[in-house]
Image 1 (cartoon, rainbow, N blue to C red):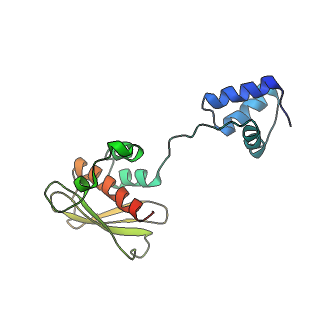
Image 2: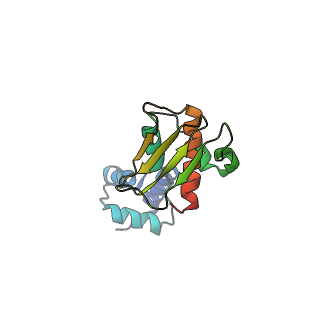
Image 3: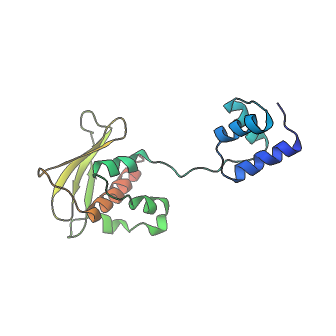
Length: 168
């Protein structure tokens, strides 16, 4: 199905407004009476040489980290999106006081896609793992231990850096 020039202009405006393809598909049907499948809408946008604006990436890893740390703020997400604002790696890992060290197991634990250990700035350790659904489990060595919010943030950034090194 082809659209006239006015309809094409309207679709281009919707793309500029940041509408998703499904929203454009719905508006074409409701406002112009043009019923398209999702694939047809996708091809239409492609034919018009338009690119829908991408939404902010939603990382399963980030949400899993927040859940696993019982609601700690995900400030690390901003650093992930902007490499210049990320702390230097030496500030994230290492053995000196105030740092968080993360290691990744060469062979993941049973039931885990990837696993490893973390040592927090106060010396407490924990085992961590991601399951098949991308959920993070954090098992501290000391029962009831909860890392500080600053350590959680450092853990998130250090874990992200380690997994990126491995291409995960």
